[in-house]
Length: 626
Image (cartoon, rainbow, N blue to C red):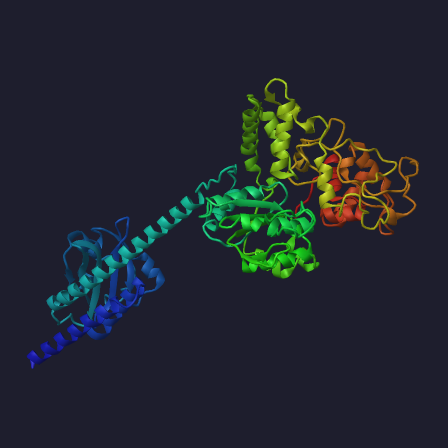
């Protein structure tokens, strides 16, 4: 009978070991897995209150899993090596058996979970958890009885030792996987930082800003393929340089790079230049002429200003882009070609398609890979490098040794450059030509000599539809017509081109780098206004027709003129406007009424946003932020 009982117990223990091994290999959640192991020991072998403690990085034993314990009790289960029964097991690396915890002086009951020591006899069996011969934790269980445990403690120690060995291997595996994962994450982060720091270099492209590095990275990715590329950006941003860089980084670099400006030729001549013509095709065609598509065979054809070609020619161009075949003007023979197409434009093609000025099918054909070139005002970090490059270029071409002074460089960095890199190059060349002592000082720049006109060009481009066109709401009045009765400003200055563009130092409260000594530079031409009556009793009467009043650029006004302009509008804000005695009061009223939104206040006052900003600085009014 006793032999059968031992055999049955051995079968149960063997089954428990098998189930423990299955549980430990079933999940990557270590804590959940260890709780399942303790639950199995409790269910099959009546080993109550199982607990598993593991050593942390700071050599502290921390309770990881336990049955019948609250979260607070779990958090209190921390021991140092040698402290209490658990600490002694870790320190010695040997199993421990306590027949009655109530009589054990090393028992700390730190978790506070054993409150029944006086009612029953609780025996504790603890074994070390080892991995690679090193103790990494402790596994303990309780045997609860009324008169003391009558079983075999040696059998419990033997079984728990096998279970602890399985747990040790699992913990070691989890820690190895976790460490490898942390290493891979650190390596991934390091590589991402290295990739972000890669300095993509392209010949003749001078830059260091993040925006341009992203562009050059895109150029390197696109270059090896033959996909059609559309380069978009404002005039003067270097679209042709990027197109040439794509060609030189591709497998076609030994073949021709042919460029043509589609906006520079009339439609009839453009067709002949691109497709070629046969002898006798038209008057003056004395011989066969190869077009650019034939000349660029095997290489790259760069179509600049493609947004300016006529709708009729767009249909002819679409076929050769799609099929890579064409006929010469006056010919019938179909010619196959192998050309990579790169196009560029500063036109809003989406708007042109919506207006019917550009064919949608051609747009989809050329818009395969799009590269956007940021304007120079959005990558001001490149201005010092570009300025130095253009100075060196001037020195090489003229055999001189001109230097750029820091004061001049500070002014260059404050300008928004509506003409972008091309305007900066012209400004440097102009200043280097006119400087007298071999150093470009700030006073050598055109903006310091009251010779900057690019600000006016900027406003014509961004505010007025076309130069000389009538302003909205003012039919028949040219945009260039001045306002009678108000002082005319000095011309704007080349090299800074402020004109209300973000980036000018004046926009942040400082003095404009391009401002002449007598006032602000000229900006957008304003609308014609009726002559203002003379002031009466310290204030101006409203103009005869409020409807005819339009925005006046603050760039064309000096300090006194802005105050005068606000004064002229006192009493002209509608029936809801109260009476004011000073322009400052009227400005405060408008800002408060519009929630301190300068654009809305400008519309209420009949001023531009720039005028409102300038008036706030003039009257020392602090802007409220919500």
